[in-house]
Length: 141
Image 1 (cartoon, rainbow, N blue to C red):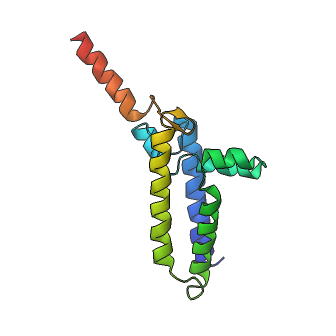
Image 2 (cartoon, rainbow, N blue to C red):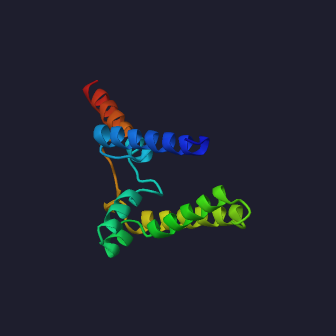
Image 3 (tube, rainbow, N blue to C red):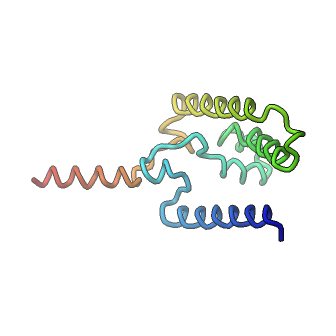
């Protein structure tokens, strides 16, 4: 087994363990949803992927419109990792993709938050739970 394959396998195994544990204990995989209770720019990508693979292309796009561009971007990054001289302008494309992700996030927060999945509030987040506990203590004093 080559060193690169070991790194990839280790990364996939760590992500799978993280996914299973956070989803089981918190119901979300997003650190943003778990800790502060608001969606991150990537919220909905996993569900969009499941919907896409199930053949529900419109629902996939509605869950996260950047699922397919994200997969294309990851493929491009993979080409860059395998053949660094074949992928041109990787830094500029990465910056442009990050800017697109941020712009879509702002649009989704303005138009869909907090009423439409996946742009909802997690009231059971760690911060939300601490805030409720703090209110209970203040009210009982």
